[in-house]
Image 1 (spheres, one colour):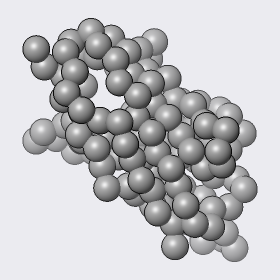
Image 2 (cartoon, helix red, strand yellow):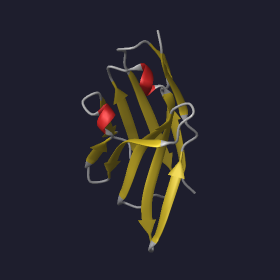
Image 3 (cartoon, one colour):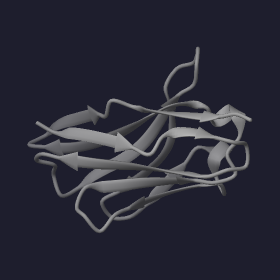
Length: 119
């Protein structure tokens, strides 16, 4: 079983910064994709950014140039550095990992962390 634990959410003023962390424990295949998704109030969950085990990254257009996803030195740790935050970034942010083992795909989610951007 894989568990994802997020931290780092909170309340920040517009233009401010936050860094989210996600630590994955359990058995994860060497080739995987970890990512951050968010669910704004009254909206569906949406992709924010992903990073592969090879280091390739991808971002939602609205966060390009403001958010940076990276992997930590500890195995299976991923961060989301969020700068120049806007009120529309307010959402519950979820960590996600996807990998394949023996031709079966596995998806795991964290419990989510609230990010509120407000003055």
